[in-house]
Length: 325
Image (tube, rainbow, N blue to C red; front, side):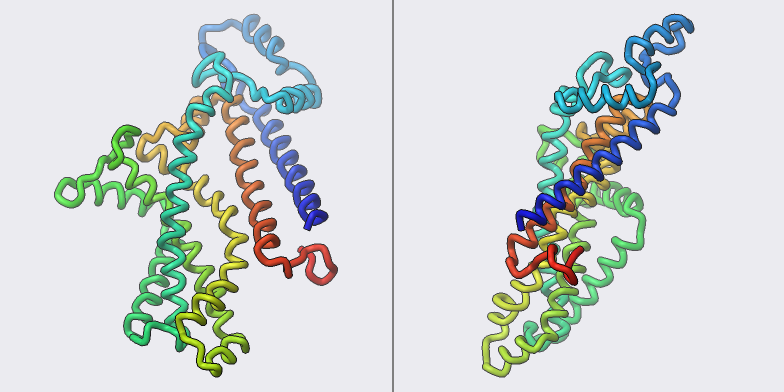
């Protein structure tokens, strides 16, 4: 376990280094206007002097070395356009708690709805269902339709539909724009952010539970006369949840990707809306820092997924030949 953990940690750091280096290099090809608040009012001499002071006229390798030295010291630079001369970390510290609260809330909703939906769908494929075949088949058909809809339809389409439909005064009349002091304004963005993960959890849990239901030990448990609920809870669900654990931290990627659009749609002053804003304003330093942070979140999620699966089931190993990943 320790050997594998260290190996995966090393791979994750290398991946993060490669992503950061590529993004840093590409941003150096962007127009220099992204480093000036009032570019149109400056003459060529002032522009060159400022670029030299910022180190942007140094060779690329020198710039990259200076960037990593500052990064290890906890310095991601200062904003040039969004909030001139304000450290990037100070801006992020203001935005991150709100995004984290909304993201964790959406994942909690996804677990509360996605896991029961996956279980209900799996029951329709076994003799261990509720005993009411119509009800079991209904949940399987409903869940399948929901998963296909979420997977096939662009998320921007149903995000807009939810916003327009649920904010209609003749229906629920929920707030269209976010206000941190208004609890009702949290409902739509948080629910919208959870939809992708609800479908994700339900789809994979159904698949793993159906696989377990077809195994010999389940047939043996039935033959011994164990109650259906006990078989589903103590054996099928328990074993099917082990591989699903790998996907729980990595579902942060779905949450992060969705937050970029959701926060802009509902005017949420969080990290997702911030990224859209700084890209539009071409604040290169802010874009660079946010891409680094989002990349780190995604890589850490994938790493934690593998480590959690090993921790939950000690029988799993990734270091032996034939089972290596």
